[in-house]
Length: 492
Image (cartoon, rainbow, N blue to C red; front, side, top):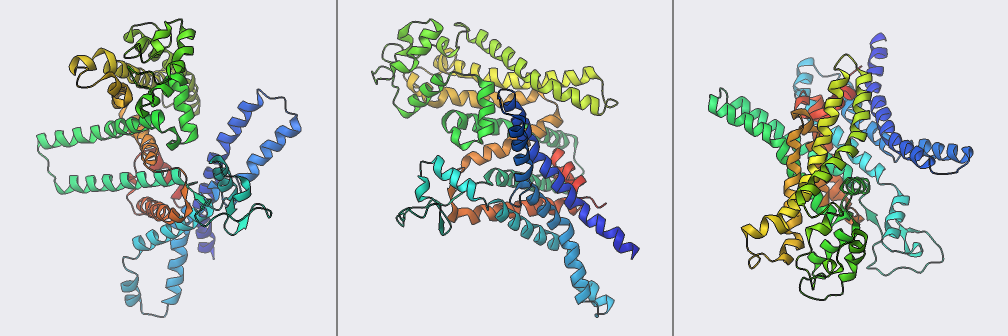
């Protein structure tokens, strides 16, 4: 009897921890956003409390993230125990030897199967959100009168849409699926690398140095590639990025939207150098704001558009503009990183001093500032300063540089700023950026008939990660995420 009382809490605790952490993750950003908005509103305290209550209640609904977290962790911890108990009861009449033979080596496959089924159920639960489907449909210009959810329409007075009409959208969990897939892929690579290192021992000195160099270069390379994909998407396909991430990049970049639109039109062929395509008015207002000649905005008269216009008031020098970008981005980043580092210091003051915390904030701010400034400087180098001197304008014309090559140069250059960070931070940042780059390869909203494909990827990836954590391979689930999962899933 005492053993049963000891086992039950150990089984339930991981599920409760997962739900609590999932609830905190879901609620905290919404509450911070509410507090930020309330500073600039005149709502009565009753309305403020109602909005807060709505956040707390809706986050606890069954088809929300906290419930999904509890199901996922329960599938990897409690479900295998339940299945084992049932199997032992069924096979209880068999001799001990036969029972051991039947149950030998079943733990890992059983845990993987339970984790897969739990992830399958959690995926279905998260995607049972009719409000999300209606919102996505209306955002694509579909009138509410013709939106159908399953077999039920939102209006009884609507006419039936044609058979080719497919308003049933999916994609709510696309970011979650991308994250799970990237973590499973990282797990597979880390496991393969560990097995390779074990089989090839002992290393000679040269081979050991090569292996160490490869290991140190993986995370910066992943981030540089991810950053290039993300920045390219931000310029030319912003709809493929998460809305909050898109907003954050725009806030840090601080570039006039008219310049971005001009570069997009150049790529589309609607803003052509040497021709009057009727687009001179696009940048005319910016020229007036910066007190620059109106001819700078006319692609028929000025080839290419001078970098001075892209510098947005910092002068003609590309180097001064890059330095200005660095300083402004560093100040913005310090406002974010310094409070976080100080909070971490007060949480565990014995681990490091306040000066070390501020130093860490300055390093992270320098990384972000270098990211921004190197992007802008690489664009200038490619389109006017260095590119035309390496390759003549006859081979690569100004139109070609501004139609994507200069932006590509910035995308390829900015990510290597990660080398300013410490090795541990490089790993965390690269694992953060990789899923956001990967998800840009797919539409954020798609027809629901393809949803099973996403569900298979989601469930398989989740099962691989959770099974590794509970099977003694937690070291291959790298970073803070792996340590956090390990602490959530531990017994007791």
